[in-house]
Amino acid sequence: MNSATSPAGYRLIGVDEAEARFDAASDLQYPYQEFADEQEIRLYEGGLHVAGNLEREGDGDWSPCNVIVDGDLTVDGDLEWWDSAGGNFLLVTGNVRVRNVLLSGCPDVVVRGDLTATGSVQGHHGDDGGRLTVKGLVRAQTVISTLYFCLDFARQPEALVVGDPYRTTCRVDFTTDELDDIVLPELLDSYDQADEQKISEALRAELPVLRPDVHRTHVVPSSPFPT
Image (cartoon, rainbow, N blue to C red; front, top):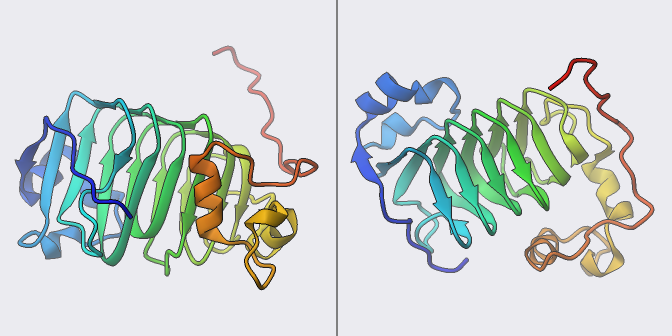
């Protein structure tokens, strides 16, 4: 991962404010209160718009901070959040609009509104600690979750979903075991298994990752009510 810094405009808050104002722990699996002396909580009030990509700060395994966006988060590029150590969280109280969402390791990412990606959503190497929770609707081309990354969706996504049925709260179109058969051949490793890093690189480059004849098996019906 490349070294990254947080966008300007945040202020630091404590656990008491995070709970009093945002009831953060109600949607988080990560016990962030236990690490309050080691990780800051950075709050962006009034939403956040990032012109390029938004990445978790730092290039070490341990994240120096947790982040709350009070409002909508708009990222013109990719949202890339990860953790290879004890965990961290990103909580957005509103909607998220982004090109791709690329998650790996054990971050706990919560979107209390809708998540709209013009590209795709990927989570991998979660070890049952990585989690994406969306309280609204997910719209994307594909959602791909592998290697024990958990998805907690309140509604069936408007996307083709590849995931572990035991770690995904919605119906999946294809299981993780089937991913090897539907991913493009150039995204397989030397053992003919889907390579998560190659998939991430293809998504960053806005290239397709699935074979052209692959289609959703679970179609979300249109609402009979006007919007």
